[in-house]
Length: 516
Image (cartoon, rainbow, N blue to C red):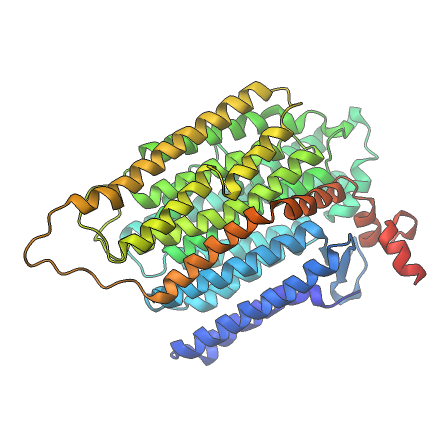
């Protein structure tokens, strides 16, 4: 048993109260400890990702209580990749918040930021559905505080809407957990996989209800239509660094669907036959259409970016809903891309806001630093729209290629390509209005340009763009790794054996380690 896997949860959980109690009135100290914590998280999660890259399963039993009775944290390729992505994203978001001084516009930004990281890390690493619920609630509390950071009536209304819809999801989650525990007597995902496989098809009403409720809960978190309606207002009204960090939160919902429905309720399971493809794929296609139409119809830049997030989640779920090794690998590649691209666009929208009084898509005088901001927007728009040569284009090709054998293959291709075209038009319209047409506006005699955004803000956005470029350049190795991750998900016996301590089901890498 390794203790390293609990550090991504413990470190932010310790830093948050320390910042509140010991550095409440010292912004410089808060910034130092926050950056130190995130940098340490990157080192720890990178080590965990490296340790699991050969297929090893890392297990931590809290209190040394064995599963399924005790709480366990489990690290495999998927979970460690997601925590590494979260920690890297958090560093650049934090740098932007400091450079733009967003962290000074309200109270307890850095403490809430650390609590948010704690919830995200725990959701990715837990091996138990009840503790997934607990970490979801930690996410909800911290994200609400971050969303209303700096105040404002519009932000408060969006925050209340966000909380109400997510509380509805939490209530459904509790109902699902109660039904699942009543039927199986366990909420440990590995143990659940064993017990569900023993059910006869004639006695599965309770299990199917629980599985549907879980799918609805995760669909709310992933913003899948028709349960997406909370996202556009919430993300567009949130402070830009907060919205950029929230780019990973929809992926928590997608991660939960992938994890639970490849392990506890895998494709081909008799008790939940037909559950995955019954509505998930059509809902994903509708989500893509809604996202594309929203991008085209948006009258403000921040809402345009928020709807592009909805569309990107539709793309992810088109791949996930097919539940084949190739489609899951494509979905994982695209999840990394869409997280980085969404964060870039939310931060760029704040760069635009720093030189204008509003974000409405109207022609006005050029913003300060317009050339560099326009170049970054151009790259971010290309990435999110899926145009070559960036990783969005590669990800969409992988998803389309994985859809050749799908029953709705024609619909997938038509909607994906059409939605991509509409998204391109929407971003082109926004970019030309904000940057190109602005040069034709006549400057008044007393015109004084707004000060240029801080260099650190551009460093943060440029760093995320560099990661997008690297994700494209190394698309081959990354996709091979995602394929190995997908293969591990569809062969969960080593995961189950490690968690339940049943050596007869251990994977080959673990057997070799035991022999050594």
